[in-house]
Amino acid sequence: MNLSPHLRTIALIGKDGSPEATAALQVLLGHLRHVNDGSLTIWVRTENAATIGAPEIAASFAKIAECADVAIVVGGDGTLLKTARHLSEHDVPLVGVNQGRLGFMTDISRAEMLGAIDRLLAGEFTEDRRLLLDAQVLRAGEPVFQTLALNDVVVNKGDLGRLIEMEVRVNGEFLYVLRADGMIVSTPTGSTAYALSANGPILHPAVPGIALVPLCPHSLTYHPITIADSSRVDMVLVTPGDARVHFDGQSHFDIAAGDIVRVVRSKHVVTLLHPPGYSYFAMLREKLNWSATPRR
Image (cartoon, rainbow, N blue to C red; front, side):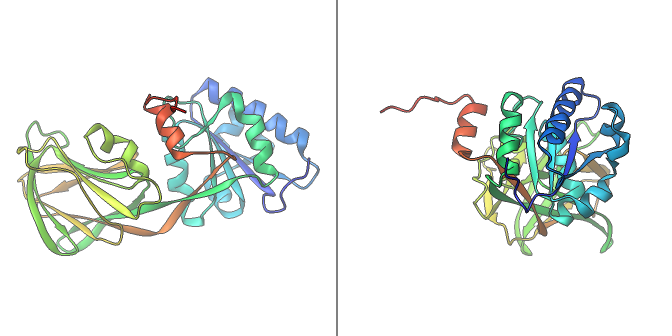
């Protein structure tokens, strides 16, 4: 097997606490060791290395970010999101093997895993660069929290049992005052996640846009809107009391009246690697159970 000279350090990352992901990692590690001609360096995320009995090749996210040419992620979209948040600032490409449910980003099935990884190692893959959101919370004009999001930034009512009210501005221009359960600010990647459940639009990954999707608004005239990905979105909490902002469903921060949640496109991107023949539309047909047989 001729290995690509561009992929020499490979990291393996699996879903925490998943026996299926652990078993798949063991198979994958054995296969990589079998095809290794001596030019590959293999690391396994520390937590996974302990479960598969490979402590000698354990590596932290920090080490993987520093030295890996590619990270193979075994799990669902949540595992890939977590990995992307750790590695995106270093632009480590990600390959997703689906051990979850739908798997919009983890597009390689367990049954196809070894063949797909062989093609990857041979240099047969396509790059798919996904935009990230840079989100921060401003309190009295000063940043008190900042993070990245690949899917979405969601402002919601938190523990309150009632609507919240927020003023929404785009590039400083007043859009509206929204009374709702909250608002989803979604990337094209996140348009098939929470935003889809809230009747938001599906955005092809190549679309340079960000979707604003109200959550259960107290008016039938509020609809999702797609804006340019160069836009700055400011959401100012008006409601007395607390609310909460979530980032990819993986971290959150409690906000109070007067706080501004500011969202812009990040300078960083996430690179996904797909095997030959990957089709975004075919993936949608499969995952969303659309009619899969075209008429001839």
